Image (cartoon, rainbow, N blue to C red; front, side):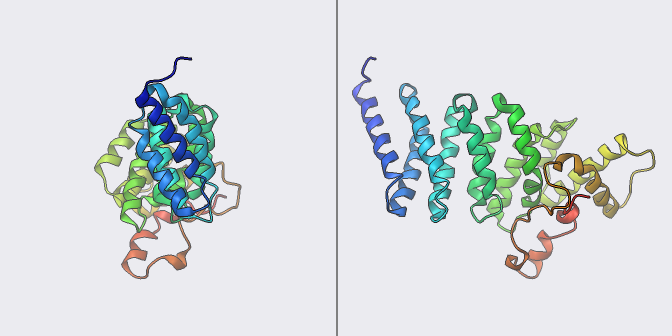
Length: 268
């Protein structure tokens, strides 16, 4: 194989050093190395992107470093850049492994980084459509809840992620939902999604009139939403975004933990 030019050899050397530092005994060095790998992903020459798969493997291993959450967060952000550059078609089975690992952090304080990575996975999943649709069937409830996360940055990122996941939800008119995601705020979007579920229920399962009140809409949406949550074992509560004891009292608690959020707590 022809040896790459000097500039590309320097890039390869730098990437190898950073990959080694990502496994250093110091958590601070591991964190900085992961950040540097993410920054380098976008400017990596096409001729040396083959080494990106090795970098992806190193960062995947870092996701198991739960004793150092800062390292995990930086690794997910770095993986987001690498997935954006490589796309699912070039990642092979690593794409599936990353998707499965990422959703495990949706209910932790690392959820912003997890949602950021999940949004990139969704935007690049066209070649893994069947697999990712199965993943979204398991994660859409969590995404739905985090639309009104008390952390504004998390809620904003969740809205982006939810919109990108809509095409994988099996809806009849996904473009309408995507348009709603762009136009509406979090509460209005949740209510609109509940109404959409009710319309689906009314058109396919009932012959009577649809409920008119918002409370009735939310209640009926619980029933309509069952098809989307079949992956949850019967009788098991759906995972909450975080323990109720960690929610602030007063307006923050009232604005987030409402009947809209709790309309899908337990499957019959």
